[in-house]
Amino acid sequence: MQVTVLGAGGYLGSALTRRFVADGHEVTGLVRSERAADSVRQTGARPVTGDLDDLTSTRSAIAGTDAVVFAPQMLLDAEQRVVRDLLDALAGSDAAFLFTSGTGVLSQRTDGDWSEDTFAEDDDFVPSKYIGARCDTERMVVDAAARGVRGMVFRPGMIWGHGGCPMIKEFYRSAATKGSVGYLGRGLNLYSNVHVDDVAAVYSRALQAGRAGAVYHAVSGETNYRTLAEAVARDCGVPSRSLDFGEAVEIWGKFPTTIYFSVCSRARGPRTRAELGWSPDPSRLDILDDIGNPAYREFFDKA
Image (tube, rainbow, N blue to C red):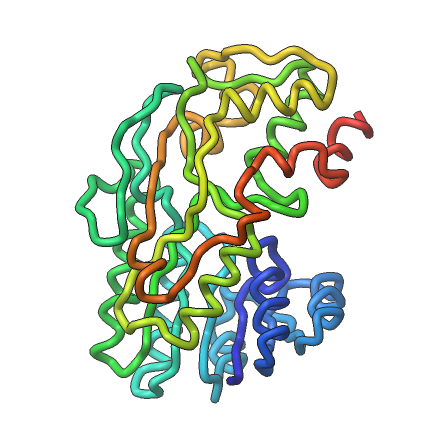
């Protein structure tokens, strides 16, 4: 197939690009910079430099493709505008549109406490107060089946692997700048997590066998923030400690504290496993294996 990956230079986008190339697809990667374009070339894909805010160039990049994979991180309003335009451009083409959302839409603010609630793909939930508006974009993608687009929504949990997990990066950054690694409240909250290469495997299977209008979760394990913070602290030789919300905001900023570190987001993926025949690689089940990766250590060693 001809596959176009939007956001191909990012953490998830680059993993998806590598996987689709390995699967034998003809892959085009939309990136913002020449540096990212060089990385895309090294995977065997063809880079195209452009900006998703430029809808004309984006439409040109996806023209004639069999599948569009949406993997960038954008502000919610801009994301919805771009997705709407992409679906308009693909209407009637029978092309696949694979939209990256995340389990953040179903997260619950607990300020460090654990929640027993866990959600499968078709379960009802109260959308997150902070990023629940993305559910409107998800519905557009799901409803695109009626317009001749094989739209699918993907909700990965906390993505880790190869030293790229944003939350773990923040722990290392705080070790370097504050001399300790904090966690909010009791630190029992968590995002269900999954290795980035296993996420790519979900998309790969869905491209071949995914159902139009489906929502697929990608999760393989759970480790709370306190455990992660303590592991990073040991790696850096600094203490770990509990933070109140105000202290957390001083360290991480209000948005990361609110969206990442103050919530509990537990998910499971029975549809992904049943419909796509997916299961995570047995060697990639423990997020603690990522602690100590040189990509993280750079934040601490250079301080």
